[in-house]
Image (cartoon, rainbow over all chains, first blue to last red; front, side, top):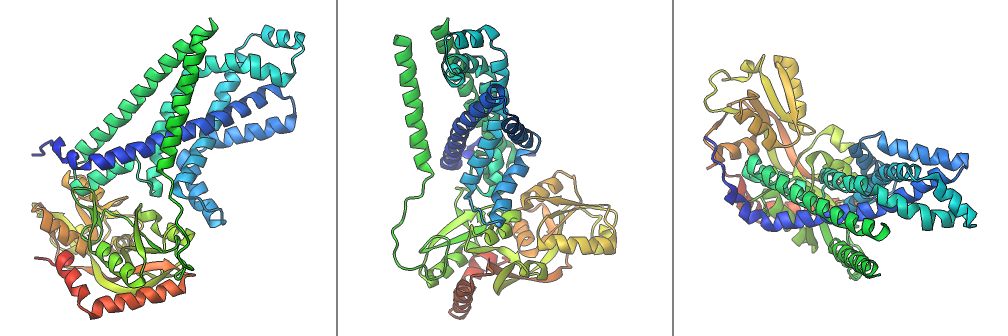
Length: 221
Length: 267
């Protein structure tokens, strides 16, 4: 009979911590780059009436929303590598996940901007603000506030998506789980441990977002 | 105003956290020691790619450290070349593409020579002969010889030379299904749970499994005497020659026998 024994994990703690750090690092960098990209593209899509820019932005969004992240990762890491564009696995991961996150965030931001009352735009133009200033000072601060809950959703999706990087030889949290399982033949303990760590990180994100929502709402109310 | 200050602090903490974290992954820039003699990825370092789930050739012990025959062999080669060594533990299926792409200098991962592989990478001299074997559960009395595999569900790791052999056995003996797995422990676990009947895997691996656990047994017949060798990028002839010379040295001065006794003895 299979005996569950979590004590086998004790010697793996340094590896688990290292893997966790890589996962956190990758998620944070991805979220920052992806959000900036998403905010820029989302506001471009909703503010500029130029058809070409709109079409390019739409193609980008559909391309990255419509294909699996794993396919994008392999294409950027192995595919572009074949063409001479060489990235390290971490770089390829950051590029892929950021572009992917950017596509999702841009739609979140676009939705948030659509949700803002028309009067705000009219008031801004009545004050003589340019479109750029109107977005920077009036529209985006409100839009981002509306977008916080879906953005938090995105962070927790990123955190889990980064596990795909284990397929291109980065020793992240998932890969450590695989390492434990393949050398101890104890998949139950290994993946319970990995699952708990992901859960813990996600709970941290949820609490951080609640904290952030309170602060920001307070500021504007 | 107070709120804004607090928020500013929060952002500051977040940014500093990111900076600290992003510093962790950075490689410190090494000074140029001399010109890159073997055209390695990093000057003065031999970057070795393998998939550490393949005892007794390369695996992680209970502390998560890399051990095995190939690990020691790689260290010997690096010593001969006068290079530092760096191991990259990667997926088996990605090893050859990554070698071609230039992520590693050499792949030492119990890789079998084959014509199709030789079109894309250069193999060194062989350092082991490793036929494929059939491993089943000890209490399995249905399968006694290769003929009994007809109508059974068989497991094999994909992207390996074992898979090619399994495919040709499949046309000869008509398995019910040939299931392909990413890692060898996956198929062994599936067999332990009764989901498949037998596993086709290299003899060195199955011998090691039998040594570790009394639940398995190996059928007598083996198939295809695969030659195991290291592989380097096709363009790197200097490295290929140096590694070949090193393997010769390892054979001649008795180091090979020592490694063989440590890792591959059946006892």
